[in-house]
Amino acid sequence: MKVLGYFLLFFVLAMILIVLAIILGDAAPWYFAWIIGTGLLILTSAAAGFMFDTQEEKAKGTPQ
Amino acid sequence: MINTTVVELSRWQFASTALYHFLFVPLTLGLTVFLAALETVYVVTGKPIYREMTQFWGKLLLINFALGVATGLTMEFEFGTNWSFYSGFVGDIFGAPLAIEGLMAFFMESTMIGLMIFGWDKLSRGQHLIVTYLVALGSNLSALWILVANGFMQDPQGAVFNPVTMRMELDSFSALIFSHDAQAKFVHTSIAGYVTAAIFVAGVSAFYLLKKRHLEIAKRSFRMATIFGVLSTIGVITLGDALGFIGAHAQPAKIAAMEAMWETETTPAPFNLAAWPNQDKQQNAWALQIPYLLTPLLTHTMDTKIPGIAEIEAENTVRIKNGIPAVEALKLLSANPNNAAAMAQFKAHEKDLGYGFLVERYAPDQDVSRATEADIAKAAKDTIPDVFAIYWVFRIMVGFAFLMLAFFVFGVIYSLRNEVEKHPVFLRFALGMIPVPFLACEMGWITAELGRQPWTVYNLLPTWMSASSHSVSYMVFSLIGFVSLYSIFILIEMFLMVRAIKQGPDAPHGADTGGLRHEPLLGGSVLSGGHAPVHAKAYLNEKSANEV
Image 1 (tube, rainbow over the protein chains, first blue to last red):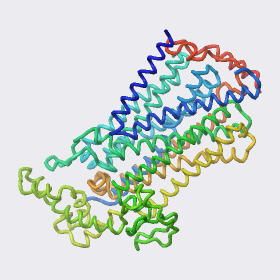
Image 2 (cartoon, chains in turn yellow, green):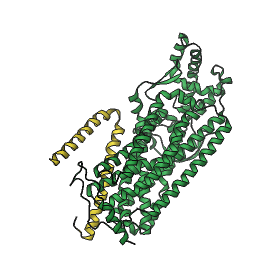
Image 3 (tube, chains in turn yellow, red):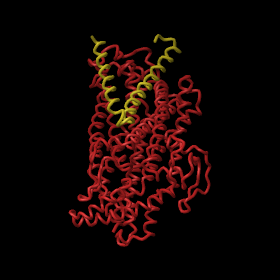
Image 4 (cartoon, each protein chain N blue to C red):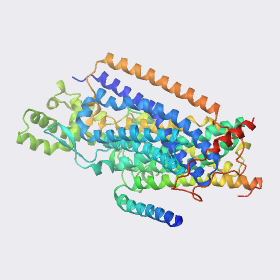
């Protein structure tokens, strides 16, 4: 049930982004680029944190 | 009669307060987004060190935010006190975004930042993460609205001048907020804030790495900041290019000044890599040129003409002459709004009304119908901004941008190889880089605003008409007051920041968590609550006590 809840949440988010892309695509491409770009920046930076931990744990030989 | 000294002092006052304020803004814009990234890692992995990192960088954000609000407050009022004609002329358009900006900054952003700082033990992790995201969104949205207002000043869209009310009136709200200048400027400014935050975090982390303090926090922060920064710097340079492309169409005089291009060159025009512009002689004393580069750089084509300053000045001379009948008609309409002949004359010359206002400054008794050719020539010269200042300020900004990009590329390489601590020279360089993005942001602001001269609203309202009619002594007194007060604010900010950085995170996390984690959010309870683990504090305190 929880998985279904997450699925629905992220599916709705994806739908909102698609609608935003269609609406903003013509009138406000840079605003849309900012929304997507900032989201990706956050996720990429977060991924950098995950990667650091993975490297550290591997170096120390601890389970990941 | 307008006192030009008062106008100049008003400009100095607004420029100085804006530049002081803009020392605080970029860090807030970027640090809020960086905190969102940090807290995302905390919520997903459950590792307490990321909470500690979020709280530490959040403390520095709070210091910066408080002083940013304090310096920003006065600017909202300055429009009314020092630029009353401007405020009356464009209040219908300018007022709405400014009001929304105020609401965003002082209600949404301030409320959320309070919840973020004080809500750690009151909110669930999911709720707190949402609050942190809303802080990032709120701070950037408040920047959006002020930049929409500024975008209108640079490229007025969505408004028409009403000759009966003698004011600009909002015609299309969507045209106002979706203007190309506003869009590109917002994204450019927002991402410049991200770069600022990334350099700040990397620099402070480098300080800890050099001092061998808080190593776990510093290494993680450095890694995340350099990745955050390298992508942001690519973005900010891309948006800089977009702004140049937009400016080439909307503000040719600014672009010609930024490139010190006095004459229209055959396409593709050469790029002045370095030059020494002389405004009196309207030429460069010397110039180091790269052939064929400017046209594709600015227009993204090889054959689009880029007008030089001499051509722009000649075109503006024609527009000034065409604008004189519009101003004459306007005076008749102010006496009798039903004067059909005056209305017809106004409509015929309406698009050059602003240029007619330009010559009013030099005409005898400010009567444009008595303006001489010499007066028109002076007004045409005014349409070209300060080329030397804009050219070099712009180049310093671009140079800083590429310096930061190079820094981040090295930072990412060293961090990914996990050997950043082995490069103390680079770490010292990182520490020295901290002022660079702040200076680059200031240079960008100066380029944008100085390049807009002689207009407050481009092509519509000259700066010389926009100011209030204060006395010189009032302006001098208030200018000295602002500069003194804001200098104290800067000193306070630096003192508090340095003290907080020296103090470090509240629970100095010198070691890793030893594998002890809070429950990862996505593996546990994302939306169903689950308060931030209280045992984290006890654990961290215990760890701190065991550490030197």
